[in-house]
Image (cartoon, rainbow, N blue to C red):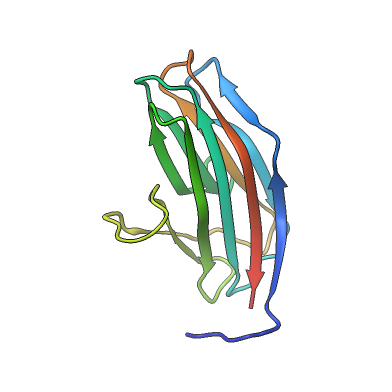
Length: 157
């Protein structure tokens, strides 16, 4: 279905530009949170997410994730880095599929193009408040990683 609507509305739901870092343990830890108010994402709405990350250089894994539905929600972004000192996920989209409880997106760490991973689907009820989280998980608690900045916005046709 193609929806053309020149009056479509885009609005930011959360913007963070202060570093939120994690070190000291190997638990998946929330470093950024955005509340998506009930009904904000309509049945054909789109969440658009951008994020900037940093970490120390070591041979150990540092895992960055973004999840819709809180810490136990569906992962829509996953990147594992070791010696790369920064990572940018410039634009990630999660689409409602003609219902407020049916989403599709992708989890790959690449910004676009071909991908060997299947799309991700979820059935998160967007008619009630939901939480979008950014998390860091370290393979070695002596390492460090940070969410440097993020933007979560919604577009409704």
